[in-house]
Amino acid sequence: NNYNRTVYFYFDWWFNCCVGLACLAIVIFLEARGEPLQGQIAVGQVVMNRVVSSKYPNSICGVVNQPDQFAFNLSKNPSTAAYFVALSLPHHKDLVDGATHFYSGNEPFWAQGMEMTLSVGGHKFFREKK
Figure (cartoon, rainbow, N blue to C red):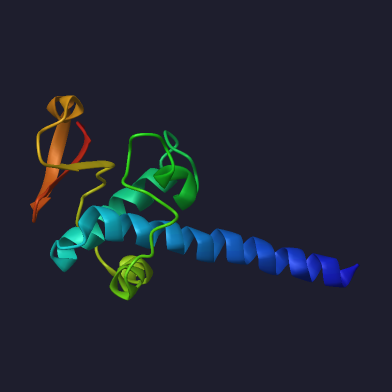
């Protein structure tokens, strides 16, 4: 019936839009709080670059839930600012130049085979070498 289709449509929209937004805001908050705005945007852009890559899951929550990839915990409440950063991502130029990886702290093994595209705050951003 039409009611069930309408309910399903809104649930599907809510799940894909709003849950994805929450997943993105949580990662921005956990990975980049305390970083400059440019660094927070860059972390969000890495997540979105993975979503559109065929090498990773095709949803935000799928990407951020991959083991050992991002600081992610659904029990954490991101700041309002992290939601604003997540919502603003489509309005920013690509700061990370297609990067799908980043780190802060000690250089991980995988960074040796990649090209650094940006360094901002305590983070360095990488993509596969062209």
